[in-house]
Image (cartoon, rainbow, N blue to C red; front, side, top):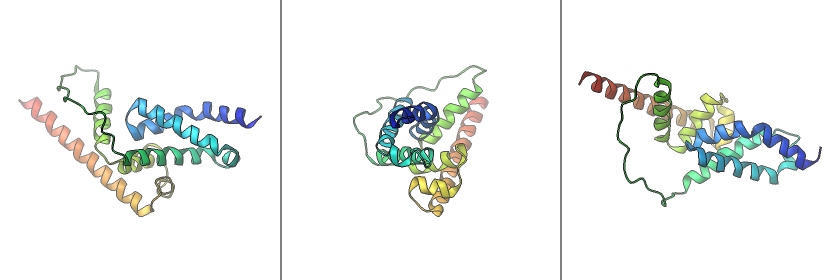
Length: 169
């Protein structure tokens, strides 16, 4: 197999997983696809060097560092103009409600906290691997994870209190 064919096969095999990781970090489908595509482009330039080693780990590192470097830049061209109103949703949407609540809670975390929580718990990576991906110490990973989980718990508690208040009224 040539380098190009080998790389094409790798992209086809890893696209879904990479896009899922990118979505978990960006919380936006279009940004996730852009991040995944940019990451594969960066990987292509180093393909000869990493294809025999661990390209999956190298790709995960590219996705994470590209996300974090982009998160440091402030983008001010798009600004929401109004907050959508709260609407009642009928039964049968519990999982959707939970997913939307988690999405909203994750969006309020800092980029590093979001990355640490997702990589530790959704990707089930050890702290040492997460530290390598984030370019920080294991202690920092523990701190970002702890603070992220605390914020998620607080968000969940607040949402339950809001729901209880609406049900009583």
